[in-house]
Image (cartoon, rainbow, N blue to C red; front, side, top):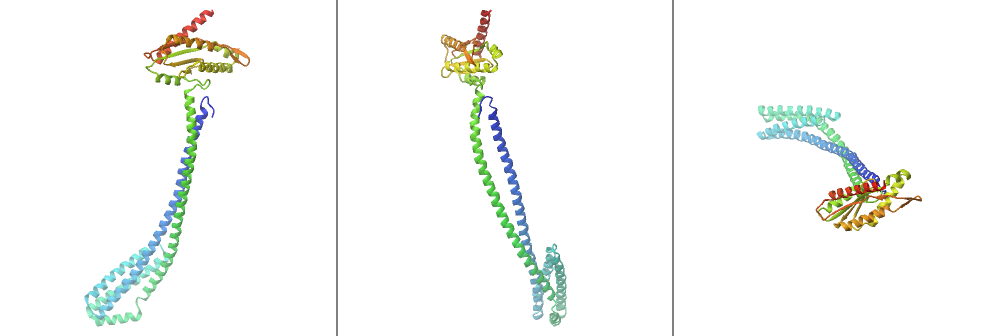
Length: 385
């Protein structure tokens, strides 16, 4: 990756953020889409399962009508053989249950035209048979068992419940066929739910694994670029020296300790730019930066804080005479000629400096050094005139 302004690194971070955003949106869309399909299949399965339960309910009511009508007939016959009150009670109970079952059956098959028509006939036949049961009960209680036996014989000869049994058999056969179809539909729905559940799970796992791998790569790239960005934020892109932010941070770490500051800007730098162009000026700045680094001690912070302004922080130095010698070497090394495209370029430095045993802050020392540098530059100009 390139250094300098750091823009390419911000572009990489933006790309990382965009990829993560797109990944999240894609994951959400994928899960919503597959979730909708899965929900649709679950809804179909529930519907098929409800239809199976509905068919069982219909079959249950068919059996209940058949059984209760038969129980009513048996109770009536038993009374004719042995006229005991409990048989009439059983007849009454069976009649009520038969009527109730026939009505529930009719309600259950309303959505099936064929079965609904048969259920209405079943209801009518059941009412007719139950009406005869009740009238026979009245005859038995009023006229005695012989009269009931004569009435029963007449009904047996015409098989009064034949049509009801036939209707119930047809309805039962129809429901059995429906049950088979609905069970198959439910099984297909269940298998579809399992398949789509597996698909959703597999896609989610694959997408998550891919996202983790890709995110790991991006994070690795991001960490590398963040380190470079940090370096860009702390260093001057042209010279590689520390910048204002970096030297301020270093000065804060030295607060309350002995330190010295050297400050200067370049003399005759503007004529170099004007005569030879900005490329020459940049070459001068880079050369000065390199020379300052070569002259600095381990732990010193050399910074370019402006266009042609330089500041050096010297931690642990509180000896003014030693500092004066260092400042002289800085002035000398900056003043050496610089070769650029076959031309010898020359600049100078109006160096100011200040030191403290820890009682002064960096800002105070920098202000003193700046004042000294300004005074030195003024004396230099006066001397030239």
